[in-house]
Image 1 (cartoon, helix red, strand yellow):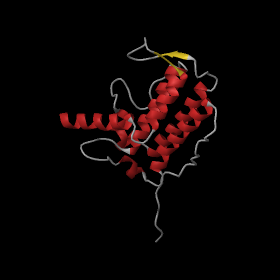
Image 2: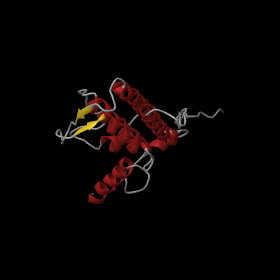
Image 3: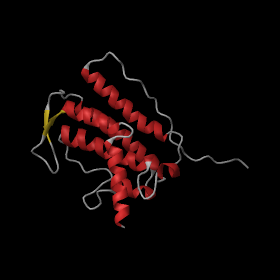
Image 4: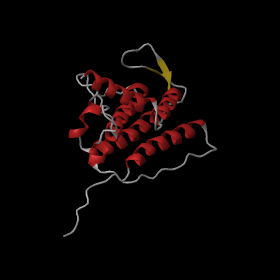
Length: 180
């Protein structure tokens, strides 16, 4: 009887950033490198593997991180830098932690595709913007302004393995679990 093999995350093509590049090229290449690193960490894993929580009582999973980063890409590039009026893909006002919490019922393949789509849309949203363009913040601090360069640098930081985003998500999940 043949063995049925389920879907696993394909390995992405990840390119090393060039060492001699303009500022814009370097920012774009390093961000893309770190975006691809997240997908590389998922490569070869099944849907169940992606949904598995890392360490109890944390609710952090690779799929939760992918979903979170899709919303982060959307937030910084599209909603802030480009001023697009969009909802988050996974989180809502009623359930701000849905990106991490709702992975058990999520479609991992669709969520990975959503992340990759969001990365492309984020890149497109700032393609014609200067790194020096100043953009207003949305959310709790509309008085804060940033330039597009800051957003690129922040997203490189957020996309690095072991970033603040990963730790913040893990700590947030552990704090919620401790209160239960």
